[in-house]
Image 1 (cartoon, rainbow, N blue to C red):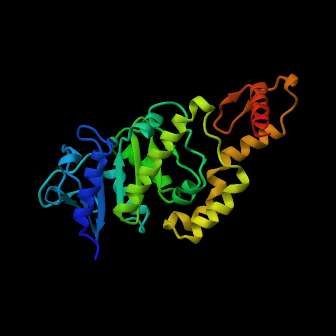
Image 2 (cartoon, rainbow, N blue to C red; image 1 turned 90 degrees about the vertical axis):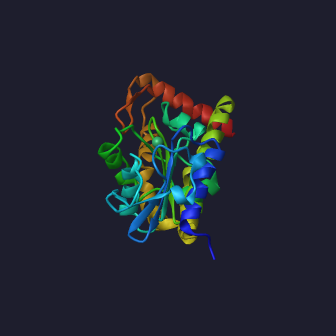
Length: 272
Ligand SMILES: [Zn+2]
């Protein structure tokens, strides 16, 4: 028989502290318990969380019984609202992933390790910073159905799973990928998996039935990776560098065409 849910939540919370993924009162863990949710209390170091100190909230985030709920509860509730298959949400500020959250770019957005793609899906989005509360909740909402973890811009990481163990493993994997991506910078940075490798890996993910996102992974992969595909099309159809034509990415950012072409050549040479 598995351990009581409260004990699992408290254990995950202490683990966040043991791994150095939270400081001060940072981070929070919740688990679905019927129509209510078990949650870590606010203003408490995750080092000190025991099953008895956990609180209970309803679907609107109101405390049932004693205790005070943390301010980021809305981020957890929006995941549960949109993902009936999810029973635990974990949020922390692990240093490598939070370094990515707090700087420009997102080197772990596109998968560069096959196993990670199977576990986390086709994309780890970085959601632009939004003020805590409704704005942050609304920013996360559209991603809930499509991914199992996200980087919160200028904030940290949030991950969810079918149980506390899976949610924790996903957060751990995001931090591990972030560390690899950062350690790879002196070597030229990580190289995303080739486009042709993505679909078979997503099919493996769907076959393994890893979360509801997996069921939809194949159909949504094109949407999620659309920006990259469009960028490749732009490069492929671009006029010669001497034509001096600026290209525009779907995000509206202008690129120096010569630089884009040069990068493609450098990449091709590296592969040969
Ligand atoms: Zn936070």
